[in-house]
Length: 193
Image (tube, rainbow, N blue to C red; front, side, top):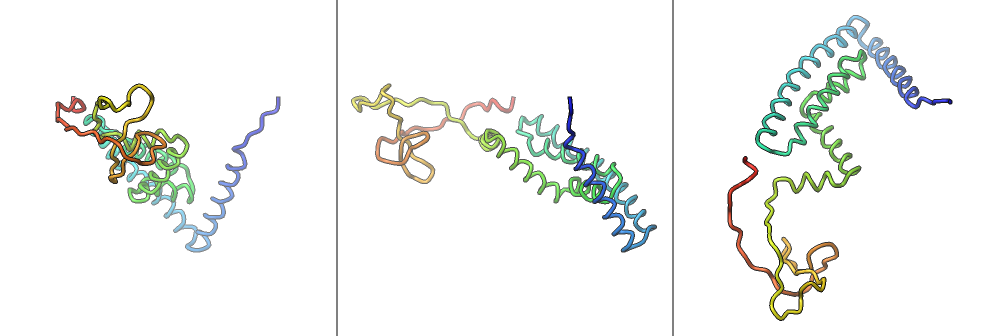
């Protein structure tokens, strides 16, 4: 059975790019300064990864204790871990990529792109992130007596956030009909337990 490795071209490309980048840096600033830049980048990056990793772990623990959806904290922890691994691998390109994942402003850009890509792959993630923490009002629709509405399958009419009225659910395109009036009564918040 012949097994073909698809990762080998990427490893070869990485090695070629690293050699070209280091050769270019040596030609620009010299061998001694290049070695110093590589060493300093790795040491400073690993120290930054350590402090940012500890901060991300504290933020994740705090979010979990508060019962909050901790997607940002968990993603930050993952990106910091990847950045730390990249900083550990010798090379100029991996150091730059690792520092970009560990440094908070550039990590935030990477986090947003990563979350968007995950939400495109699984649209339910976006829905869960948006709806988490929203107020949910339990209730039921009751048809008006004599209106003819009931278990016949006709959807109730609701007022949207922009003031438009129409059938609830997908495909609701407006119209006229009854508006359900009521009040929201604050009760004990079960999420704080």
